[in-house]
Image: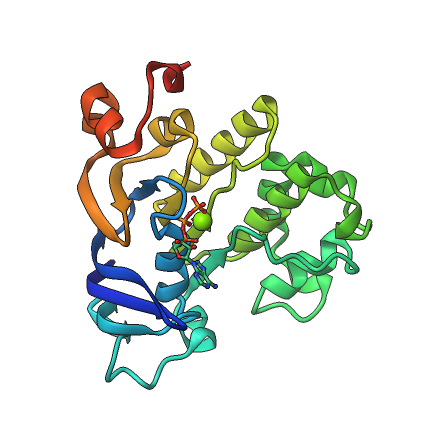
Length: 246
Ligand SMILES: Nc1ncnc2c1ncn2[C@@H]1O[C@H](COP(=O)(O)OP(=O)(O)OP(=O)(O)O)[C@@H](O)[C@H]1O
Ligand SMILES: [Mg+2]
């Protein structure tokens, strides 16, 4: 579904990605792991065209969407290819209601009446807080509820590919479990997902594949189950101690 081949990204004078190779197979959930500063967020932003790849190629269903010589596609065009991005900062509109935030994410709806009611009920089932605070300004939600809203925005319409940056960040354990359940439900719809995660328990629960980044490169790729079973590899790649498994 998505392939990165030898992708380099510079941010200003800094050379951040040093030849990222990454395969995201269709219908699976690929975890993007790695220490702080490894280049995970930069990789997602490069896929979305928010940073320009200075070398290499990004291919979506074999069509090039980024890389030098690929001038046709900017971020809006990439989003129109049915790619949704949930950034670390969540990108929700604080002054707008929960309902309006969802409406803006539904490209085919002009008013709340146009929203697919079945899909909305499905989302309310996954994230009850959205129903409860439907007409509240999104800025008044708690951090965890905002994260739920950000993910629900990416789920309001079926997408080809979802890029999600650290959805569990800062959440209380009960909220993390809730998030994992919602993402499992999303997985069951065969949506292709690339998920950045620091929480290894979440990564183990959700990942089909795992790619580990270090210093602007993918240094390991394989089945999540293999990484989950190999504590030596986790220690070497992620610096995880046994405590990460609780
Ligand atoms: N706007 C920027 N200007 C300069 N350097 C940047 C910028 N954004 C990121 N970097 C640098 O690029 C490197 C990779 O950052 P990135 O945000 O991709 O890491 P990450 O793997 O997402 O880390 P984290 O787990 O902390 O979110 C870091 O060294 C960071 O300092
Ligand atoms: Mg990041």
